[in-house]
Amino acid sequence: MMKKILIYAAVCWVALACTETEKKSSDPEKISISVTMPALPSGIQPLWHDGEALKVVAVAGVEDGKVGHVEYDHCRYLTEKGGVTSVFSGESRGDADTYIAFYPFSEEKVLFKIPIPRQQTAATASDDYFPLRAYGICNKEDLSITLKPLCSWISFKVGGKGISGIHFNAESALSGTFGYDVTDSRVTAWNGDEEEPFYKDLDLKPAGTYFEEDVTYFAMIAPGPFILTGFTLKSDNVGHGVKIEKMAEIAQGGIYDLGTLQIMF
Image (tube, rainbow, N blue to C red; front, side, top):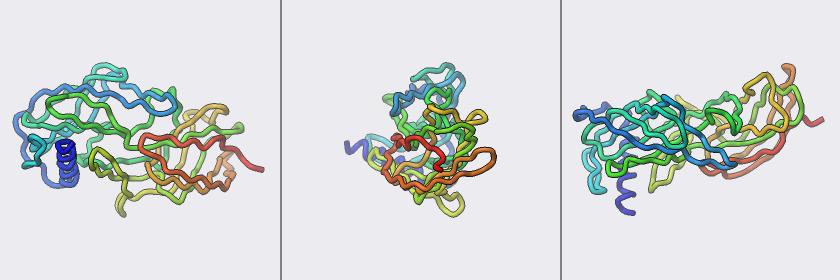
């Protein structure tokens, strides 16, 4: 347990240091890591797709659970086949002892900085790409990872025809840029800053022209306190506001069901 805590402490140190100038890596080495998508509530199982990419950060300086002189680099790893579990291959520094994988792939060289869009297309459980933010860690002795969700979701159905958009209002952060601090294998979200703020609202649109009745939809939000104060259903360019009070503590990887959203007359 102590070794795990120290390794995660090293990862935290790296996350804080990511905005600094990276140090020169050792000679690159080809690495293959087996990565498994997490199983989510409501029977949802995201899948990998052919040619999909992961951001993998190779960390050097964690030896026998002790934090040494930490160095790191950011790499793009690719898979050749889909499925729940897939092997991702890429080149990383040869002296790395810890690997951190982030999904989805991003070119940004910053760790634990997760964007949750303010405008989203509502997802269904059968979508090819279910909205997900996730990460995982492994060491060079065991190159296998099961990703852990960094986000949460709300689910709902729409009652009535001709609904082309939904706007949610809350007293809690729903979208924006969030950071994550890894401590003893536990991830905790903290709010964004002035340059990359968080928002207490969320706009959703359907994949088609209108939301369908009796279909369960999902939207990605930040984990933690959830205090919904209302929503607006848009129909024929007219918004119909509904006041509502929903409060919950939504865990990472959790789904909170809002029931059926409909215009109240």
